[in-house]
Image (cartoon, rainbow, N blue to C red; front, side, top):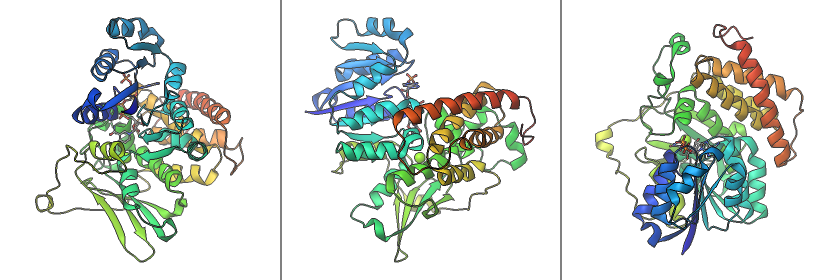
Length: 399
Ligand code: NDP
Ligand code: MG
């Protein structure tokens, strides 16, 4: 029986993964090794009981007694904390879903790769933070990374049976998020509720806000560079409000292969679950005549500083990706917490990158985990200090 684990099972990607596993027969078809969650232990315990998992782990030690109580009599082990999650990722499994949100997904992802598994990777933060380390670890241990981000799954599928040396460019599509049609000057007043109102995709709250600020696409540019080994100048971003083309690959002969479908994460998740086969998925079929038209537009760089900042982080190389992700996570925390305005998130990331990257020159060496984690922590500290200074300052006034 195929052994599987789902990290971040209680989240948006986790729930879609669970839905597909259940439809494919659940415990009759798969042996579930580990399921992890955070605060939602009731749902975690429910999933673990249904899939008869070996172990269920919450990220939070304080929830352990309650998780134990919820699993009493089931024979399922309960554990808590980041270390327990990393240990569970090292338990042998044939397929592991990495769907924890944020840099907390990095260590479990690396532990899973070290056991040579197939890692279905939704957690883009681990590639932004430590892409070269992730790719090198996969290679060293004969593991495989299958992209789950819809754009990268689309690119992966467009590249099947293609020669990478014949690739000219990768074109990432972006919906533009919840605030796409807002006047530029109104963005500074956007609330969390406004930014959460995504037109096409149903996702967790953090990535939904990142879609509105375009930090999500900025991270996806870095993710594409790491996954497919192309140069930054080969990666383009285009606004495509309908979210029907999930991304495209342009080849040296001028041809473009585009991957299309309705916006439903169960497609890329299911593709990764069934890979290398294709299997039927419960995804609505695209009705092109009903859709009638698709539109495209160049992203306005003044509106989306995140795209420029990602390019600067890629040019800086070394640990700049770790700094970029950490600063972005703090900026998002501050926006959600009400201490920074929507448009101030990019100001904070820019100031944080300037503060930390000057201390570390560019480097092409693959940074080890300790260096990456040190940079993550250093940047979070600097970003918090800078955010405290910025709080209350008008947008664009800098520090
Ligand atoms: P959610 O916020 O919906 O879920 C996050 C999951 O991680 C939950 O299980 C949550 O537990 C758990 N979690 C939160 N914090 C921690 C922590 N510190 N340590 C361990 N576990 C934690 O996120 P999404 O499902 O939207 O996104 C997951 C990842 O997939 C992200 O990296 C995102 O960028 C990426 N992704 C998501 C897409 C989507 O459609 N949602 C599309 C493409 C990529 P709990 O809820 O129980 O607290
Ligand atoms: Mg995406």
